[in-house]
Amino acid sequence: MTHSIENSPFAIRGHNEIVFILEDLAKHQALITLETHEGVVLVTTIFYVSADGKYVCIDVAADDHINERIVDSHHVTFVTQTNIKVRWFSSHLQLVVMKNGGYAFSMHVPSVIERIQRREYFRLDTPRGKEALICKIPTEAGIIELPLMDMGAGGIGVNVKGEIPPVLLHSEVLEGCSIELPDVGRVPINLRVRGEWSCVKTPMGDEFHRIGLQFEGLSRGASNVIQRYMTQLEATRLSLA
Image (tube, rainbow, N blue to C red; front, side):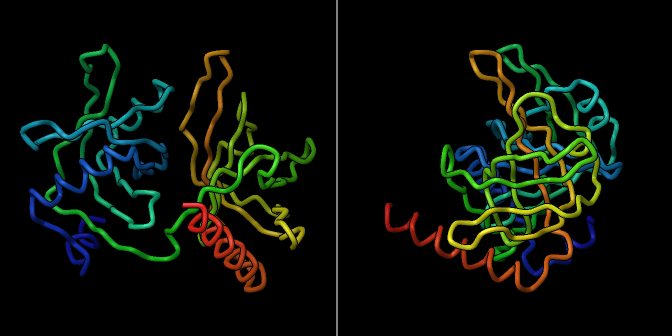
């Protein structure tokens, strides 16, 4: 992983520029996928870059066991879930206590990062509420229906209220899934679980988990339909801006 970033034509090595990019990610609370070499995945955000530009503080998981596994890993990669993909790595993270008493991961500002804009990493927020798109996932216990949060050429993000179904806790392929798209109908897809670990608690005590699912072996027909829908969605968003 180190070699691929350092030799990438999109590698950035200037310390001040790297700090600027990381601070911009923190400012916009950009979602970042953290993944260890051992397979632990966490969707997180950057809290801040230290005033001296030496350290980055990153949000932790709600599960202490997950945090311990991340700290124990010596190969952690970070990839943003934004249109412009930013990628970097760390050989060691530490758990630190912040001024408010909460915990955060701390790491040295990376010496090199990769910054690249590619269509497959472009994600669009999908409609919410009554107009939300629904992903149907068949399981032995029945069909699970989950509302979409976002969509890209590479996959989708879904929202789970309450306890996470066991089938979504492992990096496995979910076959026979589908999404209902407006004016199109059912689009058959297979999905691979890429990770969750982003949890929001409401004042009423409800928990909402955001889970990333990657398209697996997407057919050309399904890909074309999804791309057309994303184009329409982006055009609608721009017209309302």
